[in-house]
Amino acid sequence: MPLKDNLEEVLEEIEETRLHSLTGEKVNLIAVSKNHPVEKINELSQYGCLDFGENKVQEIVDKIPLSKDNINYHMIGNLQSNKVKYIYDKVVLIQSIDRLKLVEEINKRAKKDDIFVNILIQVNISKEEQKGGVNIEDTLKFLESCLDYKNVAIKGLMGIAANTKNQSEIRSSFRSLFKLKEDIINRNYENVSMDYLSMGMSGDYKIAIEEGSNMVRIGTKIFGKREY
Ligand SMILES: *Cc1c(COP(=O)(O)O)cnc(C)c1O
Image 1 (cartoon, rainbow, N blue to C red):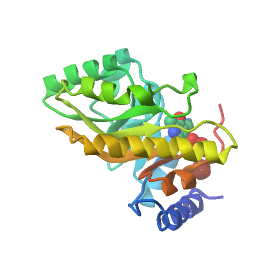
Image 2 (cartoon, protein in one colour):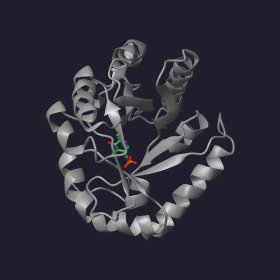
Image 3 (cartoon, rainbow, N blue to C red):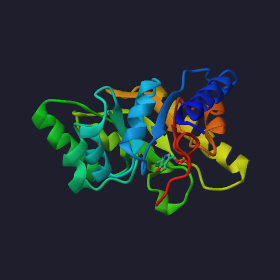
């Protein structure tokens, strides 16, 4: 199917699901373009899809000069601190922050430039170690340790559900992340916003929206299968 049709179908399903979601909030779509050519990104931008998720620093660096000016990139993959310098001021949101070393490195550079870098804290809701993320029970402590870094702006949480057919397991992991977000809001931390709860991918985004996600990261359903 053409990209335009895939996009429209996803947008319709997002809207339909939102109508019976926990919060009824508007849902932001991040099209996950990793391993797909920049031509497709530019094409999608013509249909109004402007936010793209990538998981490799090099791929972002390569794509940006070839991308239409109004396109926003989100870093959603595992980030090494020695590569922060290539992207911290080029992406709109770094969604995969799970170590203080990264926060330190981003803050150092952002402070020098006198800018703020927006991040999400990635929380490990699947209990699969390879997925990365802070353990859910350690998240408050981690967040509090980030507060000293004034040029890093915490904008919410990101989570990846387990790769399983067990829908109730997926649902309960999303639910636990939503609850954590509410808990953080109630604590009224200064300079912390919980604007974004980034959860849901091609296989589970409807469940995620029902459970209060307002940012879904969808690759396969828009672009088709990735060739590696
Ligand atoms: C690849 C990826 C996605 C998109 O996955 P699909 O199943 O293709 O929709 C979403 N989030 C992260 C963190 C990813 O790495």
